[in-house]
Length: 59
Image: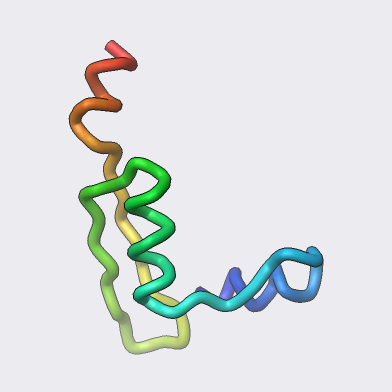
């Protein structure tokens, strides 16, 4: 999420996102399986996996 802070500086559309906003963005983008891992820092780790139907299209 710290990268979001950089994006607010370098772009006109960048913004800091809440966990709920990340979940909505991931799901809307076709990443129905994801983990948001909180670590003892300002940032979090986001692991995102494409939906099964999208994987089949790639094969």
